[in-house]
Amino acid sequence: MNRGLITLLTDFGAADYFIPAVKGVILSINPQAHVIDLTHEVPAQDIEYAAFTLGACYQDFPPQTVHLAVVDPGVGSARRAVVVAAGGQHFVGPDNGLFSYVYAREPAARVFHARREEFFRHPVSVTFHGRDLFAPLAAWLSLGLSPEAVGDEIRDYAKFDLPRPVAGADGTVTGAIIHIDHFGNCLTSLTTRELDLNQSQAPRRLMIGGREVTRFATHFAQTQEAGELFAYLGSAGYWEVGVWRGSAAEELGARRGTKVILDCGMRNAE
Image (cartoon, rainbow, N blue to C red; front, side):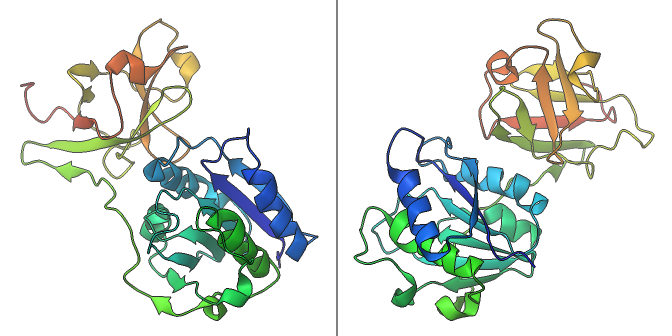
């Protein structure tokens, strides 16, 4: 059983002392911990970006991994510190919606309000809970501490509504862009539940920001015409829109929340 793997996901960047301080606290408690950086380049205070990133990769880690996630614009306020037990893994961070994708994928998740101060670093800075609350909690969990030991279980934990595709009476499905990656690829809320190329379907298209996407491919090399938008099923399980050697987000003027309409040919174009 793994009891020493801790991942870190933050918006701290790499230029300051924050990440070394967090790692130092972890290693002071568990010198044998194996600490892996997921990313520290989450846009500042962008909880939704961080939530998607964590949700897209936590299942790739072995059982008992501890995921320490800190994107925390409410640090020092009344927002709670939580430990989450879900999918055979543990999650530590602020109760601000950061674990929304985990909750959506793990209906049996249990959430605990971390209040036991003996598991914190003292004195606790009101501006650096990543070091003083979450890092020591993650370290103790990696040594086998039970989530139940940190505080009471809660059910009113914070989570935001994830965009759900909505089927229309005209045969279309309306979704949204939920993430834009480093390359400018636009990840939509559409999955194989809404579109499965292995099944027989009518001609299809995606409409985004006044543009139509009618090319569906499996990888980028299938479409090498500059500026040609195409849709593909991405590795996170969502339909994405990309462009060969370019940014689909820039090409479309798209951002997170932009509406996406899937039309499988069951109506005439409006």
